[in-house]
Length: 433
Image (cartoon, rainbow, N blue to C red; front, side):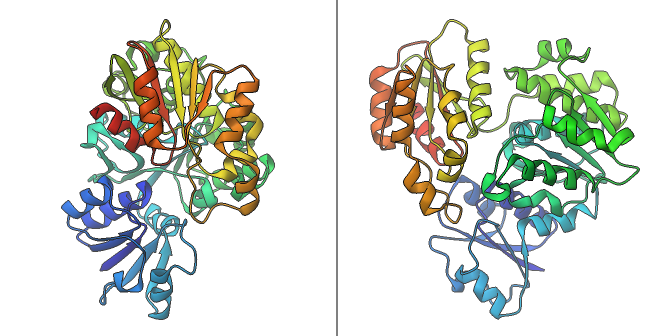
């Protein structure tokens, strides 16, 4: 079957495209920009069109089209597929179809999904399960890939709650790290988020398992309704001190992620020494407190964190790992809508940093409103932080940010370059200077 992916450069869609390639499917795809992800897909045999979407990107003999949920319905490739009566699926619909073919394990939660999925993948490997893995980050142990083809019967999947994607999936085991007020462009309220997670967990069959974080109050309230299906984990577990000793990535939030993966391994019958060995091998995920290099003696880390809770956790982890060093947070807000909905939380999120640099908001195509874009921006946030006594600067371009950081960082500083947009490109350029 010949399949075309609209928005193939996304971290999730690209992993699914790799799955199709691994099954011998002829894959084509399009994305607005070329990237290391699309270049890798081309090396694997996909035919990629970069730049503005257009109907001519759709091959004449294509039999199926899979699209990222971020595109609008007037996308020319989407419209062309409809007019030609080609079978069309959204990314979550296509993945949902896949989950019915495997013993599927899903990992969901507002924070920690990617790290927990990566740890779980290594544990399943150590336990000889040889899973197929689709994950929203690159895993170093899988050759810096967001996909691993396995020969076993299990599919391990990072399940995103944005746009209610995870409601398309059919998990036999569902791991949930936490429930937070996130993706309010989809859910509007905290109650809306909680209802979606409850609906998601109701998809786990009677003979299935829910692995849930007892330390998270919202999740505890939701998961306890599922009774004996639930296996709880907590930072109070007796294994936590062992995890702290062997885990290479910093932060209590990562100890919690590792405990989730450990609990999954136990539920599958993997021996504890094998689980601990797998956790000790984990060297971190792409853009998750990911060491990039040194700038004039300052350590540079790339981090995907874009929610206030994630910003706080990463700054705290940096403080724990480097207690006597000056910690910078260089942050690119991701989406005006998120910044608007969670404004008060963002104002408090940077309290643990010594220096804060704010870059313009990363405008997410198709997910913004005029109201949000006129109500909030990075400059307004910088003024709010300054009124709280923070040492903060607003820089309106990557070029100015690089110039400022080169001029003001000192040896032994820790630079957290954070955001879910394209700020990682600046991180690379800083390291190359």
